[in-house]
Image (tube, rainbow, N blue to C red; front, side, top):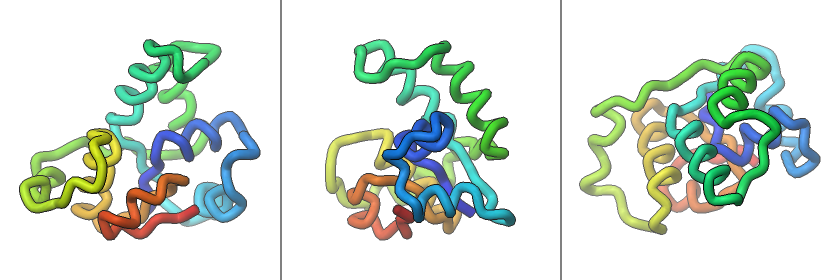
Length: 127
């Protein structure tokens, strides 16, 4: 089970060369269940609104099409995912990454991401 960070998701959907070979393999190998948090859409919409991300279509459409393209499943954000939030250290202030780390830890998932901050949270990171 692999949770996709926003960078890996965008690069996988757009077939970007920025996606590492190991990450591409982790996303495309048969039998691997890919998961996407609803936080992904929220993060991409915020980046698009601030001009930090250019998409040819609306962020929600990009995410929905990308989920279908990659054969991913949506991982709802649950109260059980935030259970560790009171004790998890603040390695940085990005709330999206922190919540993704909490989801991955609670579900025992690895995360596909170029961001090494997930290593500090003890999440198995594939890159």
